[in-house]
Length: 278
Ligand SMILES: [Fe+2]
Image (cartoon, rainbow, N blue to C red; front, side, top):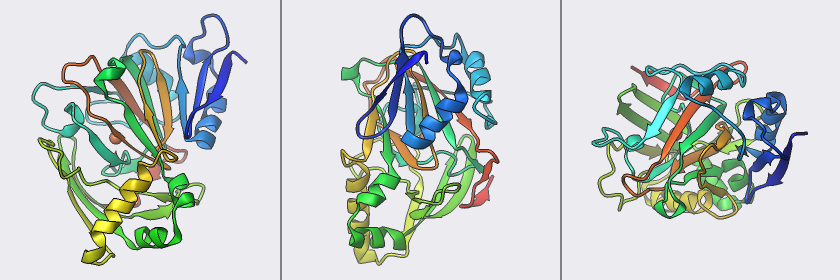
């Protein structure tokens, strides 16, 4: 094997070259895919990687069918000067799952870090292991969360959608319970650009506070949350069916540049929660 493995805390697996120069494209994707399914998140660090976005997209085709967006295959995640959406701001991004507003939900997110901010500048990507959060939850909280359904509306450059999803649902392939939740932006998130319209039904109005508080506490608990501090050249692949993810805020102007591709499942998963899409 041309790589070394080390488990990450509280979940995830990191691979590094076992010695000498190894390009990420030399690693067998069938093996890597199994690592992602088992560990939820795979970080490849210290390997040679891609010269540009096209090289990166070509690599991702090896993982499966790449989801096509209006902008193409590769999202350039970089701060915009006057962002029309929080994705392109330097502020924190609440937990969510990718594809929640799209016709198909990708199984894998693949990230490539073109340029990383300094650790002190922030900008870690946050990942919450929802299967673990449910396993570790007290039965009364789990039953509260299980009664709730999220009704989400979001309009941005690439879609105008409505999605209705039970907060606790089954992993679409493996059947174990997972959480699908778009966390409302924190009350003190001043200047949060393009707030989605979120509503939660199925729990009593007087339970809503406890619902969000307890779910937030569980999703961000140290046993369930991994925050990835990027280094130049990192490739990270995640199980988007099980994890939720977001972003910590970062210093405006920090050199944070990630590329992201969505790889569909085999067969692709038609979004079971999408009720309107334009
Ligand atoms: Fe996302």
